Image (cartoon, rainbow, N blue to C red; front, side, top):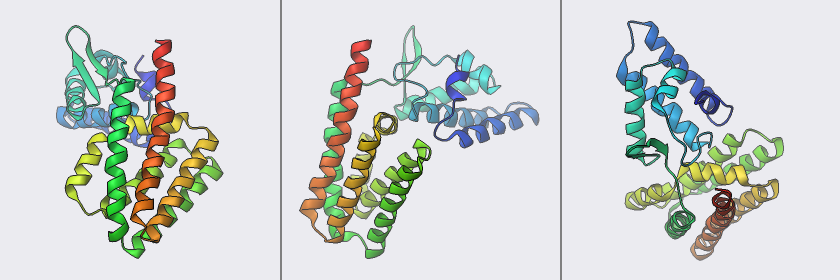
Amino acid sequence: MAQRYLAAPGVGLADCILYVRSVARLLHVGGPLTRNASIAATELIRQAIIDGRLNPGQRLKEEELARELGISRTPVREALLMLQAEGLVDATPNRGATVHSYSAEDLDDLYKLRAELEGYATRRAAARLADETIAGLRESCERFEGILDCEAELGELVKENLLFHQTILEGAGSIRLTTMVRQVIELPLVYRSYVWYSKEQQRISAHYHVQITRALEMRDADRAELIMKEHIFEARDLLLTHWRELEGEG
């Protein structure tokens, strides 16, 4: 059962294959090395959660995961504990480990916080970003458009989106702010929102990136902050619409 999710195509598949081979190689040379095997298992399961192959609320059975990875249950158990510490996995009595789940209220709260924090980060960045960094943002916008035009893997689009936002966040020049933003950016939600985006919505996202970059280029802090907030609220509205549909089906 677990194999259907961990081995499915998607973001990071090449990395997943590499980790599977790493695990196999470890097991073939002098027996299982629990610590390294648990790190490999952690990466595999984390990626499957992030790209949506393991769904919120889904049970994570140690035996099935261990069988697929060709390792004992001990490193799988350690991997699940690590993911629990990261907030990606929940553990409850009598049910075991499950993929962390969200309510519509959780999502609304997370995205409101993210909009305020990233909006402020963009305002700060407007006065601090070097011209070379802004040129890098323009290049990111071009790559984003190029990915849309060639219909590359969704993972490439998500990666470019995260790079764009991370560049602005780092340009804000505040370690505290960076830490706070990272606490409210849930990668599984970022990926899931792009899964649900139509082509038109992906184009709208690209347009927001261009407008944010232009505002930063003009050093217009007010406009840059406003557009970033609109961009994040647009993603929130789409995510909430689909999430409520799923809750209704449940």
